[in-house]
Image (cartoon, rainbow, N blue to C red; front, side, top):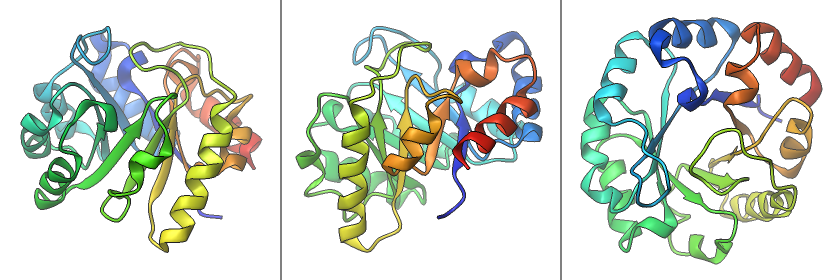
Length: 219
């Protein structure tokens, strides 16, 4: 099994100490910096824009995993790519022209991700799985940090892993929402190889100890 990647979501960090927070999670052993972009339309919350990504890029040494929870993402992917995103993930439910938008991400030289809400069927991947570099399965309904994990999503993660294996391609399988040290092993056993974790890490007293605990529990 490849090393499981841990991607702390800065949605749960202390924004008054953003630079230090990024530095601390990287020193603690984070593999990616996960950045949730919300527009108040696709999800009922507003977070940050591309200028924050640009600022984070100046201080981060780990890849920036930018998750666009926004309507019409095709209008914005080039901006986020130019500002420093390494992975740009769009929601299948938010774009009427998925292939075109994924092509835009790839043509910008970035890894292209597609995210599925809990109720979105995997069949939506049928005609795009050949181009994506990452599939993100939401294990909560997106919009807010700190929500409770939906255990039924483990079956969806397992089914997605089977789809990936059939392609023969190296596609990252990411899970996001309510993942904690106590349930992370189940998510990994289902097939995820990237774990997005927000409050579990940023609300802990010691980031390094928390990431060490997570890695120990997932084996």
